[in-house]
Structure formats: C-alpha cells, structure tokens
Length: 241
Image (tube, rainbow, N blue to C red; front, side, top):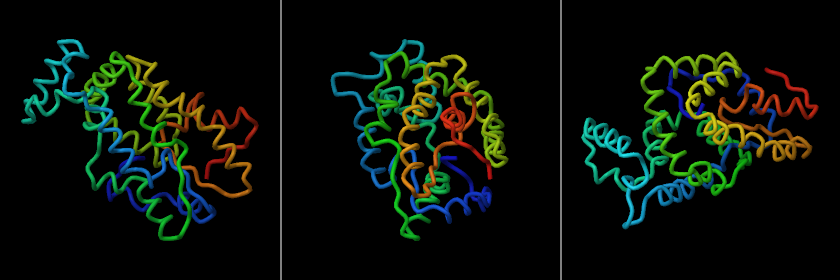
C-alpha cells in the first residue's frame, strides 16, 4: 500500500520476517531518485507557454474541471497549464503524513537504519513514462476515471486496505479491474504491462544467490496477469506467509 494511516501499524508480521531475511530491498522505483523523478514528472506534466489543457481535452471535460476546481477555490490559471495525467496524479496524491506511512517509505527508512541496499525495478524515466507517454485521449480518460471512481465513496478504499491486510491479492486485482472497466487498456498499461517488464528483473534477483525483498503495490500481485501468476507460469513455487 503506497499510503497508510497510523492505525494500520504495526504491519503484519510477514513484513518483519521478510525484512530480516533479506539483504536487499527492491521497490517499484529507487527511493534515492525520488526527488529527481518527481521534478521530472512535474516538468513533463506542464504545458509550454504556448499551449494549455483546453487544447487537449473535450470542451465538456474542461468545463467540468473548471467547475470542480472552482468548488475548491482553485483559480483556472492554476490548472489550465497542467496535463490531465498530472492533474490525476496530484488529486490522487495522499497527504504527506499518509505517504510517509506508506510501505515503501517505512521500509526504506528501516533499510537505511540497518544498512541494507535499496534499488528499483524501474528507472525514473521508465517509472514516469507510464504517465508521460499517454496520448491525449488516454490521459483524459485517466482523469475522468478518477472522478467516476470518486463517486463510489470511501468504502472502496477501506475494502482494498482490508483485502491487503488479509493477503487477498485476487480481490484487490478484481477491484482494480473494475476501476478501469470503462477503459481497460489503461489498466493494462499501468499495471499488467509493467508486471511483464518486471519479471526478467525479478528472475535476476532470484538467480543472484541473495534473498531480496521485492516491494510493489498490492494491485500488481493477484489475478491471471499478476506477478504471482507470471512467476508460477515460469515454474517458480509461490508461498504466502
């Protein structure tokens, strides 16, 4: 889980066992490059002076965005230069406190305190490309899906956290697929294509002779295209602690 609350701690004991047994931690992207990657993402998500959001989305979408931001007292000039996918990222970003309580930040701090190395499955460029390389149509759809899912209330988020705590990867996969039901190609790009790209790197860690703790979002684990199924298909035995 990329963001949690203080009440979600302590973590399930499987995290402690995996951490203690491992000499290296591997995240989706390298935490050491986090600030650099974030700055690059913001630069890529901002239109040049001669362009604006209005030129890249349906007029109805733009009017909806204008009305939405007016409700939260954000003037038009504050969002008009931002690409749809970056607006999506900004609106979905948790509070700093919840982000710091996310699994990656918590384990990265423990790794530093215990002198364990950390790395990433993706380079900053690869990680950002998930959003940067979206077409206008895909980026607009991503933003609209955010508002569609927001109408489902907070219960969905609590159900995902509950499924995570119980190790129910397939329920999380099902809920993830449902969230992209209006545009499944986006879900494929954001989750399943990345899963396949990660497998050769994960296999490299498995063959390294070291015990590595690979830490990725719970949405990448379950289902027929999840990391667990892909590893099983390659002959690996997967056990849930």
